[in-house]
Image 1 (cartoon, one colour):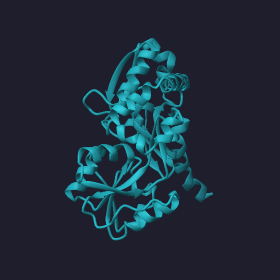
Image 2 (tube, helix red, strand yellow):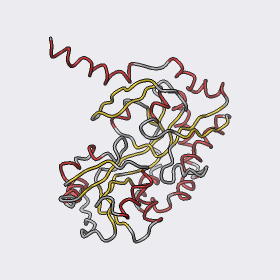
Image 3 (cartoon, one colour):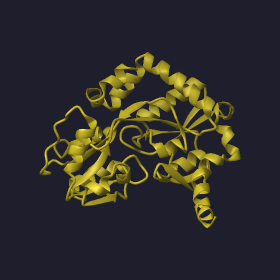
Length: 297
């Protein structure tokens, strides 16, 4: 009985996010958004999804969705990766393995999260994802003068990941906790001499590697493509740390009709060819890496 009682608070914490829905949440489902006359887009400046200059792939996508719904568009800058899920759901959380820990209440500030949001197991306990909007993967990057060469791809993702992890031995690897770049998601602590979480913005990880703040870093595909273009000849990609992943738009779990409306809108946008043109504007190199993702849609 004592053991059961000791475990009970943890069970409550891990399940609390799914069990508690703030009373004000319903106002952000489809009827609430239309009644308010505004779609509130929560976003964090990241890669070319939200540039911080008023544009980006996710910004354009949400602007078109708002126009499709017949409402105004409003961008709501998030306080950061630690806060964005609370700003959507009203419940502040942090990951604990594949589960989540509820930290407390938060003010609901938006209707959707759209900024290159990678679909992760713990996040699915907090939000519902749209259909995939962008392909991604976590890569290991290094300065151009790092002694190891990029791996030779074998066609077996498991072998390729193992080959990259073998290169980490004896080195300091940097990621970002609370995001898809968290070292703990990929067993980096066991493979590297040291694994740390970068304290700054995701956009600053590549410059930090160039400066020598760490030997290696985890970076996902969109940010890597931007970094390779922005700092040509300064960094290189050693290979994958994860299998292929997908990004999507995050919705609160009690906004099913808003999510359904987005999926229907997005399907038409893809079929028309307009979405491919939008992607080409912000990520022209992605088609060379993930051609099948876009051709299959």
